[in-house]
Each structure stands twice: as C-alpha cells, then as structure tokens.
Length: 278
Image (cartoon, rainbow, N blue to C red; front, side, top):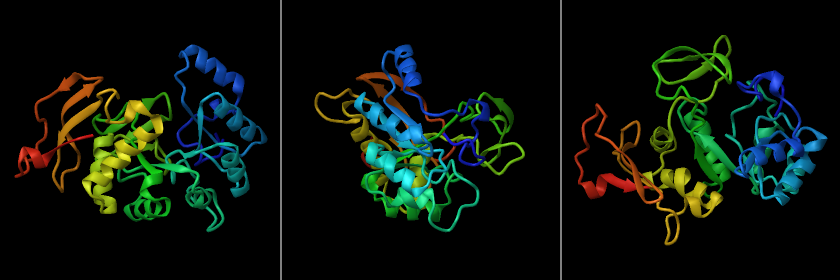
C-alpha cells in the first residue's frame, strides 16, 4: 500500500512494502490457501504484474490505500483488479479537485466498490453520491471493524495504529490526528446506518451487506439450494440504530441465540413484518 500519510491509514509505515508474489505464496502456505483477495496500491511498476499473476492463481485484487494516478489505476484494472477497498477512505485529507484516484475508481465500471457506512468514514451526502455513481449492483458494505468494536469510549493502544481514541459517538481515531483508525461499529449497525444515510429500503441495504458480497464469494454467501445455510434472524424498524440479532446459524447449526439486549422498545409490528433473514 501507499506509504503516504492519509492513504496509509493507521498502518505502521515500517510495515509498508511492495506487492510480492513470494510473500503471497508464503501466506497461502501458512493458511492452506485461504487467501482469496488482496488489497494493494497500484502506484508501483510491480503492481500490474502482481495483479495479473495473483488472478491466475485464483486470488482477486482490490485497489485501496493508494495514491496511484488515474493511468496506474487503469493499468491495474486492465490486469484484472476488480474491486475498490472501502472507497473514499484510506485517502489524503485533501485531494486535487480532479483528476484523483477516487474519481478514477468511481468512474471505472469494472471495479466493484466497498463502502463503510458507519456514519464516520463517509458523510451521508458522500455515501449517497458514491452509491449512485457506482450503482448498487457494483457496491457492497464493509464494517472495517477493529478489535475495539463494542468497547467503552476511551483511549487504547492497538497493534494497528498504536494510540487510538474511541469517542462517545463511536468514532475511532488516531490520537493527535484527523485520521480514522478503523471502525468500531458492526455490519448490522452499517445496514441501519446505510438506510438512514442514503434513504435505502431495508431490502436494498441488505443486498449491499449480504447479497452482493455473496455473489462475490460464491456459494458460501448465497441462500439457495445446496449452499451452506448461513443466516441470521433479526428485528429492525425504521429509526433503530442497528439490526437486533436474535439468531445466528452457520452451516445449518445455530451458533448464537440471545435475549434481546436492546434498550429500545420492540417495534409495534408483527413478527412476520419485523424479522427478516440475511
């Protein structure tokens, strides 16, 4: 990824290096081939070859944490890069009006973009505009949640970012900087926030959080005969800040069933109307 402040995000500069196929091979050997996607910045000459070779090995490449030029982004897409990692974030605080790497990725129809809809990473109007530009079929939600998700507000020290501060409103920041250090809200929060920020229906937000990612990863993410029965049961009503999870099923086996921990009143709807499946 980029070593520049802003695009680097909260990552330690000492760990920044060029994309390297030998390193990818070490990762795959260490995890029995589980690596399915790699994020990289295509600002270096080595990036295009890495993208092409990774694709031949069945690993998808996403553009992110980058200061690449529009031409470098185009070359990476031509080589097979198909995704943008949390577009609009991992970026400089100030950019040229145009051209810049955000416009280039928004305009490239061959890129499917992830967005962090936590109310902090993207302002509502930015999220709406980016979603309209990319189109819902080429977009998906990501949480970017760190290990501090769900923790009490305060200062913490983390492996990625070092000294960080979690505010009362759920913003996770690098101490002493305007930059975010990841997110502290879950994807169920993101679904509810996306509904609010972009004026989406619940069904449209769920498609961004579940259906579209399912199509990217294949059978593991699809609800259809023969696919793993991975689903959640939840309740939600307009105005709620999150989806209230009631049941989690993984490969057909219930792995979580909890009492309602919400302090908000149960919405005045029938179970059929209030409970849906992802």
